[in-house]
Image (cartoon, rainbow, N blue to C red; front, side, top):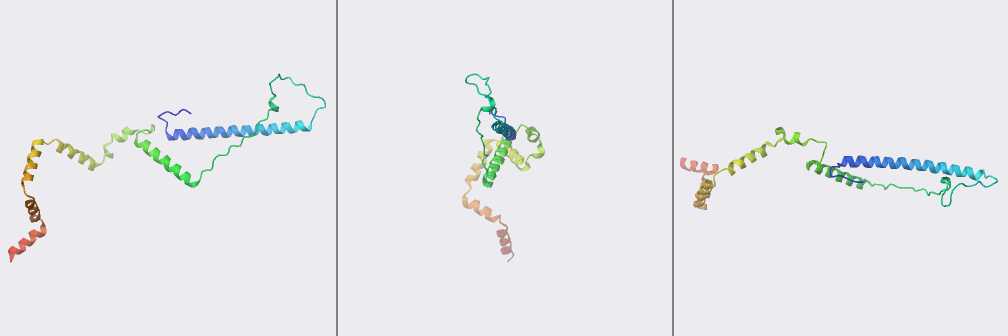
Length: 177
């Protein structure tokens, strides 16, 4: 069978189901024909004519009723419960990935992509902040970095410590004594 790149799993499954149904119909027809042939041959065994029937076939040709066809019995493989679960998980995963990749022809992706009500507000805000900070002048950023590096690590630690609420309360209590 020839598969195109745009074939979805639903289409593949439907074609498989249709093919299986056609195979089932073909098998039942063959069984009916075989049963009919068996009935015909059993009737011939009972009624044997006294004189041979002349054959009108040419050399190498066979009469349809005398051709032996062995019965073919196709057994469908049994699928265990574990295999069924595994196949279902594989199917769902593949369908989910195809949907995310935009391969589902039956879904209108533009209606979701262009709808702002589906946007993540936090991510939109983060993107806008990134744009804002990316637009800053690089000289201003370098000046700020130089000022910060001129402070000693001890000074930075002491400033942070002085801003702590517990330290501020302690210094007020000491002043009141």
